[in-house]
Image (cartoon, rainbow, N blue to C red; front, top):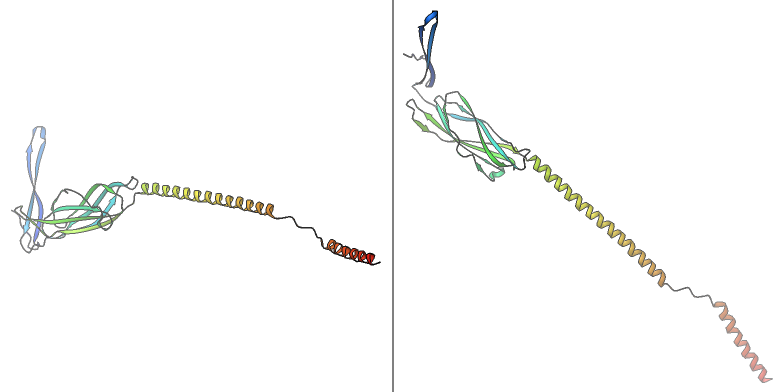
Length: 246
């Protein structure tokens, strides 16, 4: 017979009954056989089933991989009501803004979460690409288990968590590749500038040489000779005319 205290609040309780059987054996040895029996009780009254999801987190294990890794969504189920609860679970992992969602598939249900009890849950989804950030979403359908063992589903509860998913190895390789391409472009541009400068210098020298060879030599100064030549014929002509008159 089980006596329920008058101060007990409505809800589900668990306990156990231990039976003991003593027996004597030879040589003065006494054997005590005990058997434990689990029992569940429900105190009648107003029932308030409630299941909360606490501490949701999402982690990614592909930090040093080449782009993919296992994502793990973890959270804690807390029975905040006064009845024994179960939980049907489903989960998805997606990238920023819900891109490329991946379903976790069949998730094992949680059963018989006692009032006030917490249950840690981890759901792993393999082959998730590192998209810098991941959004883990879980939908929990609380299930009330009554004294006869039948179940009743309640309104689903949802939760979300955001975690980083940076593929550092792939990012480092990409940065090295970008740096090499940038260095190659810089070297090519620098080599082209050197070639253009040398070509401009060669063309400038060729133009200067051509101008120097095409310029005529300066003419001699004949100003004094013209005066003498111009004066001499005039004088000679006058003298010739004078001689003929004489």
